Amino acid sequence: MVTTAVSKSAFSAFAPMSAQRLLVFGGIALIAGGMLFGDIFAVFVLHQNGGRTGETLLAAAQAAAAGDSTAVGDAFQRVGGLLEDRGTKVDAHVHMTDAGYLALLLALLQPWVALSGVLRKRLAKLFIAGGVLLPVGIFSIHYVGLAGSPFAVIGWASVLADSAGALLIIVLVVEGWGVWKQFRGNRTDSPGKDAALDSSWEGRTLLSGGTILILLGFLFGAWYAAMDLYPHEAKEISVLQSLADQSAAKNSSGIEQSVNSYGMLAAERAVSIAAHSHIIEFGLLAILLAFVQPYVYLTNIWKRRWVIVLLIGSVVLPVFVLLELKLGLIAGGIADIGGLLVLIALAGMLVGVVRYGGSQDFSSAGVQ
Image (cartoon, rainbow, N blue to C red; front, side):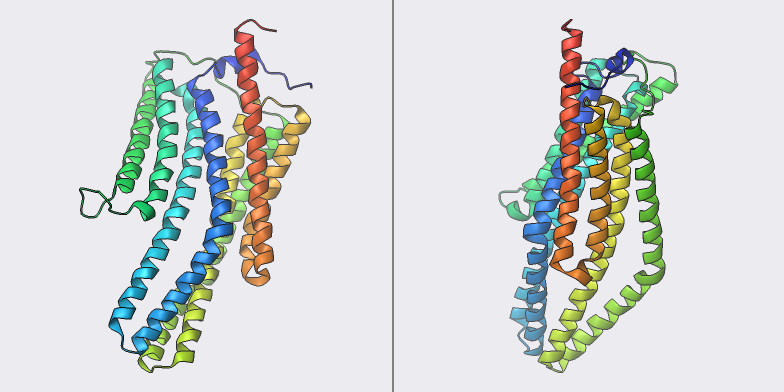
């Protein structure tokens, strides 16, 4: 198989087992892992969790109408548990993908970090470790709780998540200090020639596609803020007031209608926010990957295929998330397929990064 040519200057900027290579590999792996977890969560947890939350809220309202304060308290306690279950899984997904974005940014920043190669490599390892431990800790919060914790309100899973977050902050601070030293003219170790922006079709397509995605996300966010945000807030107050009135009147059908209205309102808000955030995130991902393309050691045709697959998935997922309320599960399934396309493209690029590193190691060892 014929692979794309890689210049010596690119090799020098991506030295064997360097901080830059670790951050590129770890960043793509974290993003892929976060997206895979997000797809699994959306298919097997999200909708079921929402259904149980609505049922429990309805039970709470009916208990309030019956004057059963104990049942009301139990129902809201279950609602809190369901919301925590959903929230920790969403946070784990978001934090893992965001750590991946940061890792790619740090990889691009390495030529301007005036620290020794050994220290930069250690920082890269610490960052990847923190990027893994943070979502693991967040995910475990709901299941571990306060069991065995010496703290009154903080469990061991929260301690793990907070410690991992602190580790990421420390790494970012030290990296920032290295950049400051670079601009102060105190470089201690040269990481090689600064890599120029990739001018290939793949790089240009990812840059332009990512910019368009971010622009569309901002435009949709502005439209939502202008047209739907305040009406949704006013409707939420109205629905909750109606729910309280129907409970006081002991009107079972009215209670059920109010709970259903509240669920639909929450769904409308959720799909709008999800579509807005996902299209911007995919735009940022495309721009970051544009800078990584010189390190994807694949044939030109396969590099282009992965770029096209990624951009298609980046459009399909947010569009069909937005259409879920109109098309139902069909739209949700298509949205999941869009996420899977992005995941497949990331896996393909990750293979290219691994092959790049292997070919460079052979070149460094004098193997032709």
